[in-house]
Image (cartoon, rainbow, N blue to C red; front, side, top):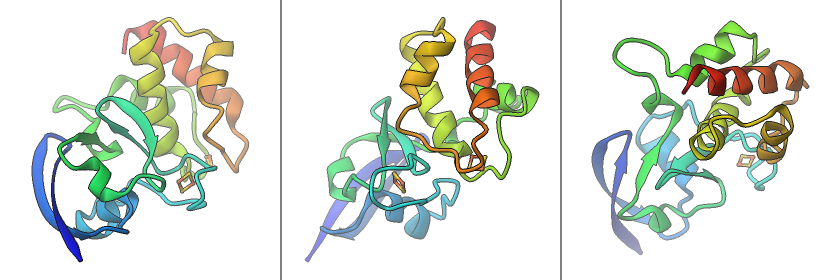
Length: 155
Ligand code: FES
Ligand code: FES
C-alpha cells in the first residue's frame, strides 16, 4: 500500500507516493537522486546518512519516509550557498577534515546542528556531539578542528 507524502527537501516541495516501509535515506537517494546522503551501516550506528529534519540531525536510515511527511529536510546538497560553500563545508576544506569522504556529509550535517545550538562549541562539546558519527579513516582530530573553526568563524 502506498502513501502520499509531501516533504520540503532542500527548499523544494516534493510530493511522492511511497511504500510504508520506505526509509528516508532511500527516498533521498533513489527517488530524488540526492546521493550525497551515504548509507554506511543501515543499522543506525555510523551516522553517514545524517540529514536535518526540522533542523534536527537525524539518521535517515532510521526514519521512515512517511514520518517525514510535512517536514523540512536538508541534505548535504542543500547546504552550499549561491556564493560558495557553507561555512562548515569550507572549514572541512581548510582544515583537511576528510580523507575518503564517505562519512563527511553526515559529519557536516551533524556539525551544522551542533553549531546551530552552540556556535562556540568547544573541542570536547564537538566530540560529544559527533559521538554518533563514525569515521572509518579515523580522521577525528581534523574533523573536530574543522567544526570548532567553523563555529569560531560564525557559521
Ligand atoms: Fe544510517 Fe549508518 S547508514 S547510521
Ligand atoms: Fe573516510 Fe571519514 S573520511 S570515513
